[in-house]
Image 1 (tube, protein in one colour):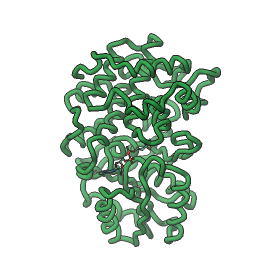
Image 2 (cartoon, rainbow, N blue to C red; image 1 turned 60 degrees about the vertical axis):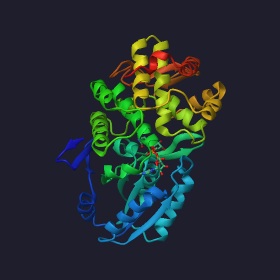
Image 3 (tube, rainbow, N blue to C red; image 1 turned 180 degrees about the horizontal axis):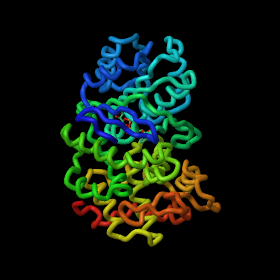
Length: 386
Ligand SMILES: NC(=O)c1ccc[n+]([C@@H]2O[C@H](COP(=O)([O-])OP(=O)(O)OC[C@H]3O[C@@H](n4cnc5c(N)ncnc54)[C@H](O)[C@@H]3O)[C@@H](O)[C@H]2O)c1
């Protein structure tokens, strides 16, 4: 991410530069006016905490063009083709045209749903992302991946679609529950472990187990995440080669999310997936015990649990996990024999294990499942201060 001044910067996705505004309404108003929309289609999370923000945005945009508001659910179950179809139909019915701009207001769930809608409506209308969660601001909007769940596969259907503009107001994180802040920190810790180990001491100094931070600290987390992701997104904007490192912790994480039926949030799934991936690398002799324990210590420092909620733990039986891992969306990058799955692993902080030029390793399914079992035994050493 390239910074022009305190509030405006660009995210580079390959050759494209997307303005990322970090600040209050004034910043957004000026940029929105420049889009010259014939109509704004504001797709907002139907969550009580977000209604005032969506109303404020609708008022602000209404100065420039008519506004149509479409509310969507933001539980993981809403991330479906049925929701995409309903939003697109409503947008068309309310007069959307090729000159309209779809504005997504909400967390990653709404961002992914609305992003796919923008890509599909009339084969693509302009998209503005207004993330309202820390994971949205520090992770989701820095990716062109738009998609919804299908056939029991997380993000089973989707496409790549770039927003015209991203606007995040860190002040709107004031209403976000600490759990959601902690969920985002799983991705921020992931970035540090696989991309930017130099951020680890910084995180050690910043992370607090209660998940309560001031706006300036939250802004720092966003800056750390974008600094970590910027080089990989510039080099591999479709996240199909070198940027696959961003999937670290997501193999077991996605499987657990799906098995939990949406009860486990994405970030908490990634946290569990990071612990499992570290133990896979440990069992393969790729990563030493101290670095395996570092995963647990950083996650614990952020207040992320080292155990799964009882109902999720019960659902994560060996056969259920095995079935889910065999449907992982990274399959097909590596030619692997039956019974092996592709995983992102590290050999040291900041160093991904590779096969050819891909940061993936074929892992025996049973070994992956054994490593997940290892995560159920929390070593006392793991919860020392980070
Ligand atoms: N590359 C990508 O596209 C990418 C990356 C990471 C995650 N994701 C996806 O993002 C989704 C998770 O996103 P998320 O963690 O933002 O969760 P989310 O969108 O489900 O939001 C979490 C909760 O926070 C509430 N909320 C949102 N903003 C709020 C605010 N300002 N104040 C109070 N409450 C607020 C929501 O109503 C919801 O209950 C997952 O579906 C995941 O797959 C996508």
